[in-house]
Length: 151
Image 1 (spheres, rainbow, N blue to C red):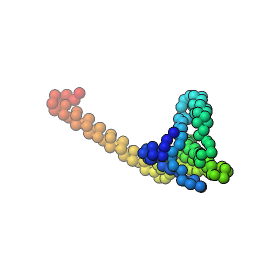
Image 2: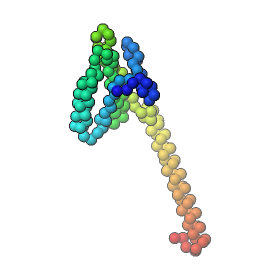
Image 3: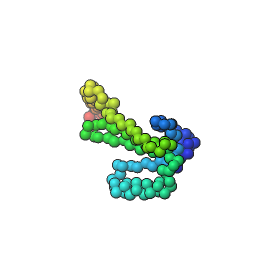
Image 4: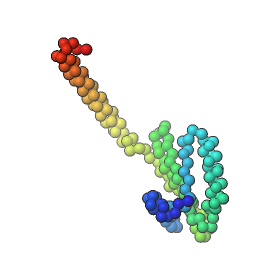
């Protein structure tokens, strides 16, 4: 459980719903869904939900429940941040809301960026090859002058 003062100290922001602004105090649970053992993640999730239910995390005093996650599709190179909120106003009618976005990383948003990046990388490789050739030539000449043999 996190108090509002602790959340402000950790610089956790608030969220605005349809009825009010919600400070970041309350219960927070994070899951690593990239874990190799998804059975363990599921068991941890069920155990946490049981613990939260026993702690009365949703009660008459609950004003909102927030669920946030980020998904990535490597086939199409899209990111999808998703925020869902269930608000519990005094009237007792649950008010759901969602905010889902879809975007690509900045590098791939402009098609010309791929070609310019390729050209830049080719120039870098050419410069590295030139420096290497110069260095090898310089070292060979130096050794030839010092000892009379190149290797």
